[in-house]
Image (tube, rainbow, N blue to C red):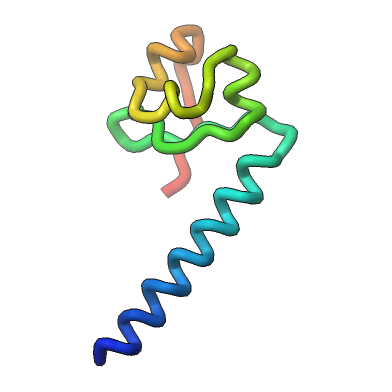
Length: 77
């Protein structure tokens, strides 16, 4: 892939991620996204309100520490 094509793909991906963040952040339902090690990668405002912590303080935390009562999660791969 030539440099301009790669730059266009990166630009498109960044735009798509920004839209996804905007949409997920404003859902009324609580959303938390975490990796295979259960480290939190994303939370929306509804989730932040549910657990009583600001989004910035939840990122990179263990989902087990934030939601110790949850024993099963839905995995989407």
